[in-house]
Image (tube, rainbow, N blue to C red; front, side, top):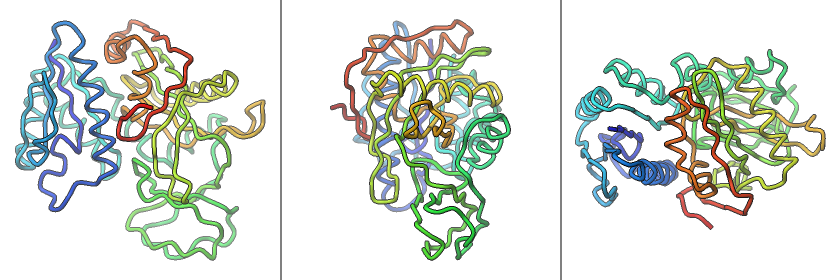
Length: 336
C-alpha cells in the first residue's frame, strides 16, 4: 500500500514565506506528522510519501520517501503527482485562507483516493458561524453569537458579555480573545469574526473515524487551554470521568448527525457545563481534519488508529478500544 501523507506547514505550504514559520502551528503540525508516519510505517507493506519544506532539513522522518519542496509551484506539482500515484491520501491543513479546501481540491483533481470529508462538509465546518447555525437549527445547543464584519473597531453594546472573539474561519486557536464588555477595544481584524457568549465549563473534544455510513467515536479528551484570555491550545488528556465522557460523546454524535456525511478523521470541540444532566453543554466547533488529540489517543490504545481509519473509510466499522488510564499530551506531541 502506498500512502501519501501531506501536512501543510511542514510540507511546504509556506515555502516561499520569508522569516520563520509560525511556532505553534509548526509544533502541532510536526507532532501530527510524526505520529501518523510512525503508525503508517507499522502497517506491513506500507510505503509512505511525504513532502518537506526545504528549510526543515532537520525534520527526520526515517523510513519515509521524502520530497523536499523548494517553491510554491514545486509544492503544487508534487501534491498532484503523489496524490495521483498513492493508494490513499491524507491531507492535514488549516481551514483559514481556504488552505484545507484548496489542498483537497488539488488532490481530488489529480484523482486522489482521499481519506477526507467531502468538499461540502469541509466548506461548511471551516466556517464556525455557518456550522453553529446549522447545528442550532437541528436543536443542538451553541453559544449565542453574532458576526462582526472585517475591520470592525467597536464591539456591540447590546451583547451578552463576557464573550469570545474569534475568526469566522480559523484554526489552531489563532487570533482568539476573551472580551469582558463592549468597552474592550480589541484591534480590528481584516476578516469577519464571530463574537460568541463565553461558556464556562470543561473544554472537551471527541474525535471520530468516519465511514461512508457510520461514525466511530474515539475516547473523549479534555482540552488544556491557556488562561490568559487567548485560549492557546496547550495539549490535552483523556477525559476519564465516565459521566463527562458519555455527555461529550453523546453531544458530539448529535453534531455529526446534523451535518453532511464525512469520511476519515473529524474532531468535535465542546464545552461541558456544570449541570450534571448536560443541559449546559454546548458545541464550539467542528474540525474537518486530523487534530492534535490524535497524539494522545494513539498512546491510549494498543491498536493502530491509521489502520482503523482506513478500514472505516472502506466501510468496515472498526472500533478501537482505549485504556482508562491517565494520558496527558502537550501540543508539540510530548506525552506525560
